Amino acid sequence: MGCIALLFLSSVILGLSVAIPIGPISVEMIRQGLKRGFFHGWIVGLGGMTVDVIMMVLLYFGASAIMMTPVIQQTMWVIGAIFLFYVGYGSIKEASGIHAGEDGYEKKTWLSSYKNGFLVAVSPGNVIFWLSVFGTLLADKLGNPDKHHFAMMAFGVICGILIHDIALMLLVTYARKLLNGQWIKRVSVCAGLALMGFGGMFVWKFIHSL
Image 1: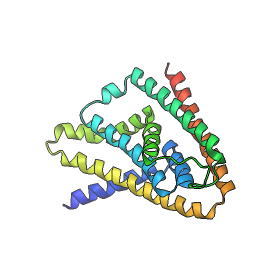
Image 2 (image 1 turned 135 degrees about the vertical axis):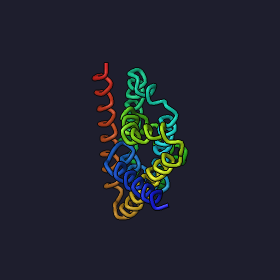
Image 3 (image 1 turned 30 degrees about the vertical axis):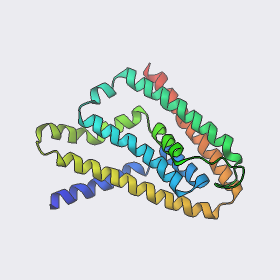
Image 4 (image 1 turned 90 degrees about the vertical axis):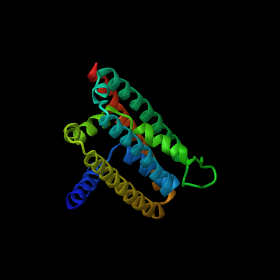
C-alpha cells in the first residue's frame, strides 16, 4: 500500500511539473478564463486533458510506432498550426469584447471551449511528451502481469494536471475581478499573438520534417 501511495504521489507531482510550463493550452485557458469565466477556462483544460487520456490509451495498446511515423506527425503539425492560427486570429478579432457576459460580447457554449482545448492539444509534441513520460512504464508493462502500476501512474499524472488547471483558473478568476476592460482586451490580443506564435512554430516544425 505504501508503494502504491508513493507511486501515486510522485505521479501527481509529475503531472504538476509538466503542466506548469506555459504552452498553447495554458494560453487558451487564460484567454477563455478572463473573457468568459472560470468554467470556460477550466473546460478548455478538460479538452486538452482528453487528448492526454487518448494518448495514454493508444500508447498502452502499442500504437506508438504508428503515431511516430513521419506522415502522421506532419499531418498533426499542419492541423495544429491551422487551428492555432484560427484561434489566435479569433482572439484578436474578439478583443473588442470588453468583459465576459457584457452586452455585445459573443457568448459561446462550454462545448465550444472544450473543442478549442481538444484541438489546441493535438500536436506531435504531445505524442513525443507522452512517449518520454511513459516509455519506462510501457517497457515495464510488457513484463509485468500487474496492470495497476501503469494505471495508477496515469491516474496520478492526470490528477496533477487537473490540480494545476483548477489552481490556474482560480488565479485567473481572481485577476479577472481586478482587471478592467482595457486590460482584458490587451491580454486577449497578447494571447492571440502567442497562439499564432505557437502556430508558426508548428509550421516551422512541419517544414523542418520534410
